[in-house]
Amino acid sequence: MSPNSSATTLLRPVVSTKTSTGIWWGLLGVVAFSFTVPLTRVAVEGMSPLFIGAGRAVVAAILAALALALTRQRLPRGRQWIRLAVVAGGIVAGFPLLTTFALTSTSASHGAVVIALLPAATATVAVIRGREHPRPLFWVLTVVGVIAAVVFALVQSGGFGALHWADLLLLGAVVAAAIGYAEGGLLARELGAWQTISWALVVAAPVMILLTVVSLGFGAPSATPVQWLSFAYLGVVSMFLGFFAWYRGLAIGPMAQVSQIQLVQPVMSIAWAGLLLGESMTWTTVVGGLAVILCAGAAVRVRLRK
Image 1 (cartoon, rainbow, N blue to C red):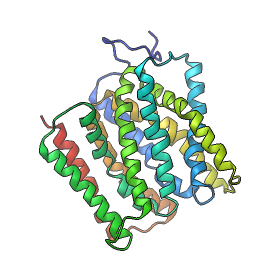
Image 2 (image 1 turned 30 degrees about the vertical axis):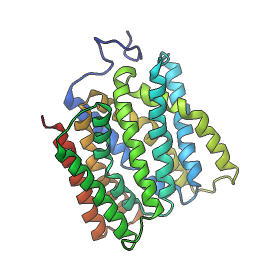
Image 3 (image 1 turned 180 degrees about the vertical axis):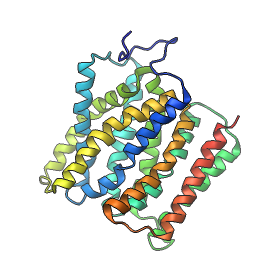
């Protein structure tokens, strides 16, 4: 069997099972993803959110199709197609589209704090998917983390009247990504890390192409070179190369432990937002970010304890 083969065997998984290796692969993926929110904020200044959310998936799908064809990967089998559709719905369509529309009306640092719920959300989906029975404290900390994120969003919106629609989109993006990450991490053990995201991109391609064409019907983007470079990063790295590392890390696992690395992603994203976009760091951003990160980290650690 060649190293790139997608054939599944019970005795020889397509990835190694060394935990430290999984953590390093996961960290590489997180560094790549940490630029996603700030660069999306740059791109939406010159392009429609629908074009960005769908178009970057089309760019990544072209690269994925080429990679699969050149390495002659075997087609997924049976229920793997359904699971790929779940992955595609979560991280190819759901997360990119929801976050892009949200970032048309909120700052990158604000989005990064709400998205900081993702590690706990991924661990929660992994618990449900694996039919685990974690300690009650896991659920308590997860709920507290959600409450912290919602309170932060309300305070940043100017009061406790109602959540801004952008915050609802960001929370929906967290749920979508958590489902895609958890299912993709499991599927990567069968198909391989880069093969999983590649097949998911191919599965989603027809819908993403249609949405891109629809977005162009409202007018071609009038973007600057910097905005086009940001879009290119979103398509090539955020939607494709970053997942090579991230899914490999999740596949090597353990999934919940590797997902903890995401706790540094909002910190990185907020730092990039300050450096690249000149966004100021307010006390609510600092307090809200710390609260969400600490709750997410504690929830994941509680689940890991035997």
